[in-house]
Image (cartoon, rainbow, N blue to C red; front, side):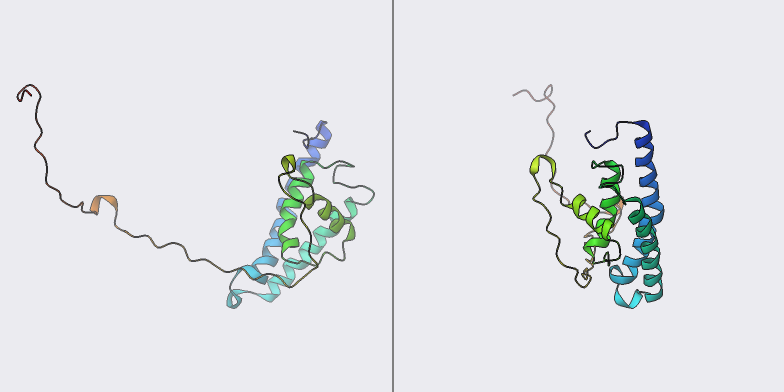
Length: 171
């Protein structure tokens, strides 16, 4: 596709950013989010939330340094690396993680998130000012109606119609 790199070196950088995101951004972001708004209030640990936020800030600092002097992660054009990293960081942005100390990251994320969708299907995303994190409601799983295994279920009885064999019962 148009976002996949054309050189093997840039292809390696896409894989590098993908693994970096999976090992540096995601664990820290999950630790912060689970202990800030995902879990019920009585199960949250503010110490773990703060530790996750600090780890995320360290990773965002690395990203801030790498974006110095370039619009996107691999240069001047949007690529698969930008797609992957920005999709993961969307969670932090959506839940109002403070990106103010990272102006290059914020500008880059704004560019990535406001790209038009395929064939212009999605209107540009309008970024609201930072707010309090949204509180997510947990949904209960649907109740299963019949918890018996299929073999133990009784089928309703119905009267059986006698079968006619064509050779014995001519029409």
